[in-house]
Length: 396
Image (cartoon, rainbow, N blue to C red; front, top):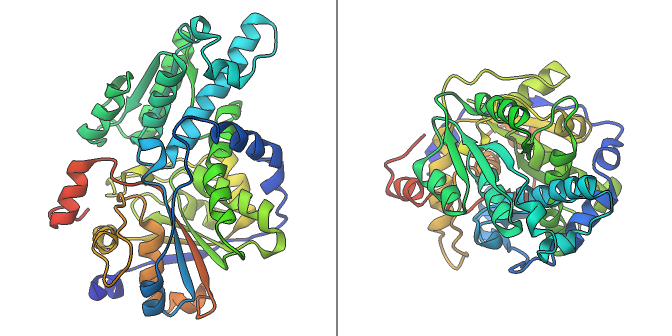
């Protein structure tokens, strides 16, 4: 295990943290507070664990590693349950209010008061799996039709999971970004409502609601800590998770907010390239990464607005260190807690381990006093892929 991390080639570029106004301007305190108030009332809500990886921290020479394990979230297996379903509810609220010409309470939609209205409002999105599963669950819960677009590399298991929640799933031959484009065009043609976790010019409310929903996870982590972490390693994708976590950490901890390190697959490094260019920049994906949820070539402009002000470092990692990290969490030594994590969940942890075995440890300011927060964004969202990783037959 040590050799694969020591041999891993990580690429690093510095960010330009400044201003720190986007953390309250793009996502306000009230955006987060409203989402937290609503989601914590949903049936089945429970805070997910913040797991302390003490033995690993000692081995790596850092003070603490805290892993927020999102696998148990609402029985859906990932943090996405917080975003897609909440954004769906907010889209329904706005559209029903528009049609009826009166204010509509989220609690009344949740209670079924507007069931007939919801049944006539189709919600759709593109997904690598977890966001679509959350949206499908939200639509099933609130009684709205759901149409999900997936790309060629999305696993059959993730497709079936969305179908089992009542979604009409459309698979295309292209990649994720092409599925996003198709969802947008067909929604416009049919009068459907896109519920996306990425923003574009003229489209910002649902992505803002998605990121506000993720604030539940960050607030839980903050509530479980007695002091601010010194570092947070956040996986990339379109940037929604990272921007949401960074913004809420800034709101909670102020000047004591942790150093933000963005981690991406080297095969899908749109945020890394954005940092180098100093503006939101697309990345051309030529090969799919094992980290399916992070295979995104086009950053969310709204997310980038926050990350540009909050992120100190951007790191890319090879796929070679992902499966070993999944297995390490599932087969810990000593009395450490077993954590069943999906491949996209471990990007931050894999980067941390490899960084601590290289000169990057000093570059990132990691030492015996460091307290590192990680977001374990998913559990076993595809049992077949997880089994292949555990058996050592899937490497990337």
